[in-house]
Image 1 (cartoon, rainbow, N blue to C red):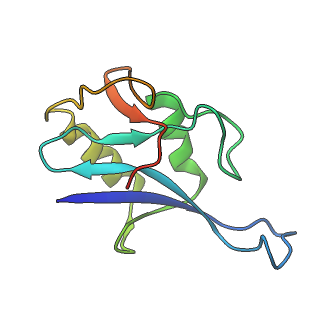
Image 2 (tube, one colour; image 1 turned 90 degrees about the vertical axis):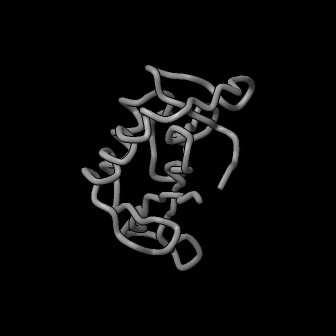
Amino acid sequence: MSTNYYLRIPACPNACEHCGRKQEIHLGQNAGGWRFLHRAYREYQPVGVDFPVVDRASWLRLLTLGDIYDEYGDHVTREDLIARTEAAQERRPRGDYGTYNFLANGYDFSDGDFC
């Protein structure tokens, strides 16, 4: 069983009707038996994010930009998500590092689309 987590950034106050929706950014996936897979944004950044997300520090910075929800729509606090990612560090590493998946500061990351 796995759970995906998302960051919801509110639309800017000057947004037109077309772009006035909340931005939802994939944060990563917690899958049983595996370490948490953090979503990276190396080549492009989602709207509302003005820095690359390439390691644990930049990923933690991302968490400060909005509210966190799981794929079922339940609100998750930053502290709870951080605790879940730390607890998952004791699990097996992904190990399939390559084009999209990489290791940064001992944490598993991917800048490929996954859910």
